[in-house]
Image (cartoon, rainbow, N blue to C red):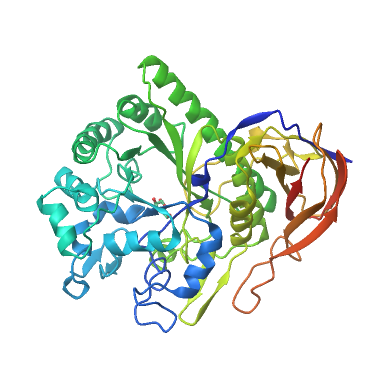
Length: 498
Ligand code: AHR
């Protein structure tokens, strides 16, 4: 029988709630027709879709990244402020679209307020200038009697927006990015941007533009920006048609974090940097189906199956395990574009990946524990990359992989425990002994289980609950208990302790 061993004294660190962050880009129907739909009977006076807000709130998003993504590298923020009817309609070159600019900085900040999320703005380091980035910080956060702060006041916002997180460009290494740069040129430019942004508001925190966490780009950028950044970003998209490749590829995020954390430690030591530098995993998801040019123009509306939901839970377990290094993570993206929520003009449904995101955000507690998982394993045959992404995510060398993947968190006083277990086995259920060490369970364990008929199950308007959450209770007393984990399922157990 499989065994999960938990020892409340084996604490890894504090889980930063910001790992449940998210991202909205001007891309397809993520913003227009997604979170924002002016004139729709489903929208409020601000144009925010109420049904979408209701679906987003349970995700408890603490930090929301905007406006891109690739979009930002051609975006001039000034186009998106002031009276909406006067705003310029622009050709949008990242996703071959048209941008009405009716959703801009103030609408974004209001959306964050509606969610109780902190805004995280990524600046344009493609076609954008240093002056523009400086003015954006002043417009948002300025308190003096100066032009950009006054323009914000004139636009109806007397109080500063207090935008604390600022990203220094998006994927500036990539040939697809407008204005992409060599690592050396990026470092020079980012230092110049950072200087004027920080002088405008010294309290802001900067996110340097990393790559996959371990490339030569990451090394050069960390060495060049370590004195001025608080975070280094990583982006990762995984998944393939094969179930096991999809679920095990999520462990690539952990490799990225391990290597990147090592690079950060090296540079901090070598340069005697005193301030912490954390990882902002500010784009992550399963994304492999909608990668053609046509799909991109179509808004990359990936449809997720149950395998993908198991992959998402595995990513989250990894972020919890690496909570000391990963302080921010932003799922890409929130609505319609590679997203957990899918809309049409008259409603929405929740994709499979919504369920683990919601359950983890709701039930994860403050302290991550080092869990022992003793389960059957499986190797992964090295497979050819599919989906035309051109990115190689070989993970076979990380195997053999335990079929059960778990994370455990407890509250600071040790009075309650949350155990999240993903059974990635496509065919078999696994009975597991859960050993609580010195701790004792005292009452009903709340079990929330995500599952569907098979790993290919997909939610849709016609079958919105093909993959859903079932809740149950388990009466438990003592230091150990048994539980059955159905094939291809995610189980989140809330255990009260004495
Ligand atoms: O999230 C979709 C896109 O993926 C983003 O715009 C870009 O940053 C990444 O390549």
